[in-house]
Image 1 (tube, rainbow, N blue to C red):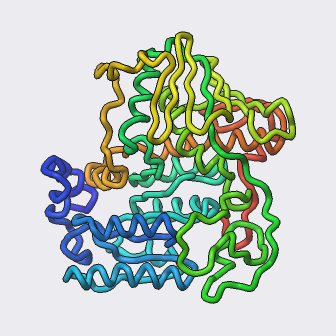
Image 2: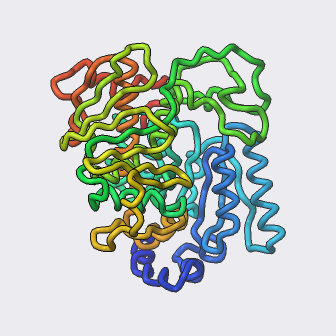
Length: 425
């Protein structure tokens, strides 16, 4: 019985609670205590949080960490080694490497957590899927539209579980789930429009050259992106406790339209029942100098505008509803006094995004922010960016992942990667 078959057969043990996963025997002698072997790629602030969570979880064993920066890599290894030493856990020691391929080659690693700058995600997703490793990949899932489609195809082809790190579907007191139910159940009448308050698009990087950071493989950090000199804004020196601003530059990310759009546009897609679809038209703002005002238009006529207060405002024929982290209100306020109807509800959710991923690794079910959900949600952000960058309307076919009768726009779906860092076959 291979590992996948065994996990699927034993999924019923999850009903007994999280420790049932840890107690279930596993057909892998290499992993200590028969726990799920995890590797971590990219050891910045986000993945350090995931690492600390995993170290406290009885059902997993941290096997290896990876980062192109020596300081962050050795710090992550020391954190894990110290934990296991203090906990008297059976651990052969956590490996550390700057080449993520070394993690993927290990048979005792079952799954990986990817938290690198966005421009590296697709290479790692494709390689991990081909290596039959389950994947937790931070949002934004991809850098381009073409990458989004490739991620879906690779995950489906290789039968792995991918959870996108867009946790608003499962966490934050259930407010987003309630908002989706209220909208779908007609509490504000027929939905007419949505305003999404998120940050602005990315610009090309023009940061000045700085002295290199000792121990950082800058060439590998750049990867498929164009060659440019080191700057600490892109890869901070040492072990940092902030979210670096590489996300503001087009070579590495889509700006805050993709950073926060991965969260809020995901909820909009969910409310519109568009998890396997998306908008069909994209419009730039009327003022070509504006950094807000772009629109996504869906087949049912709903317009989603980039702008408004931070958060999501749903506008219907009989009222409006606003939701953000920690906030949910309607106008008139009585519209949401009663809870959503259980009939047709999206349900209570798992309450823990990472645990949902582990549960789905065992059951082989799709997680709550499956690869297609993450890919299509971030596609909305990519479409907005293209409208801003090229300042013209676009007609999009979400089923073919292409622009209608627009060969020029089709060339914008991806970019030319640097020699030596092309996409895996």
